[in-house]
Amino acid sequence: MRAPAGWREYSWNLTLERTALRVVAADSGAAILDDQYEPVQVVAASAILTEPPYKTADSVLAEPIFADANSGYQLIVHELELCQQLLKTVKADVVHLDLSLGGISLEEFSAVTISNMRKPGKTRAQILKILPHLRKTATSILLTYGVTVFAFGKQSIPVRIAELTSGAHAIRFAVEKANKEKTKLRLGLPTKCQTKILEDQIELQSLIPTENELFGYAKCDRELLERTKISEMLNPCARGFKMLEIAPL
Image 1 (cartoon, rainbow, N blue to C red):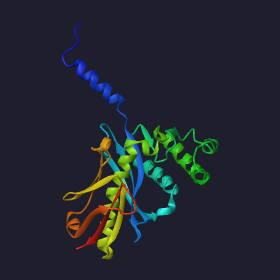
Image 2 (image 1 turned 90 degrees about the vertical axis):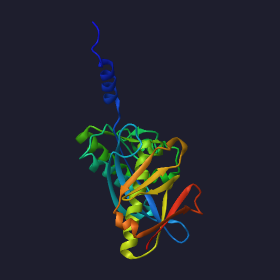
Image 3 (image 1 turned 120 degrees about the vertical axis):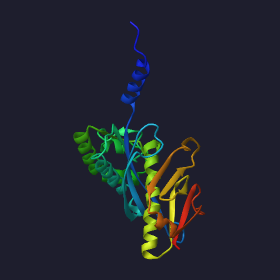
């Protein structure tokens, strides 16, 4: 018996729909720089949902944090909590955490795993400190949403999208802060990206050749952008990084 017209196309689309991986990821991005171009405050954190073709965020949960730049691994705890919040409103298959451990699931993550890692002792100690918080949140996510958390870190494209999204929102929050306080700010951007200012949207586009279609975005008040001077330049003390000088007109 001959298959109905269009059946193969329908079957192929159904297969794609079933195999498409919906990923939630989070990262913290961009930092206020001091006069020596050193980061002093991480400005924003974002959790995102991305779906094929994985070019940008399909859903975003972002917030200003203005956290101490030396917070280090403590920020990862907050990033996973943001993922948990986002999962209240979106459906996902997995969570990618910005922790570079070869893609291990947090259910397999233990003190023994940490002790066997090829990382400096200080790094292992910092990860061990946040381990209970990470496992508690990851277990809650698994039990509530049936979603496993994987520690892919910078290997993950969704984490990169989250990084660019955080950077775009950091620009927005820095613009708001500069105008509110009538001051000039210097903002260090995530690695290898450039800024694009549209009428009411800020975009951060990746400059990595294999990521030339990736970008993060943040909506921003059009009048506020028009009242702000934003100048992009290279960070003279950090190769591969750009920065913005942001000041009210």
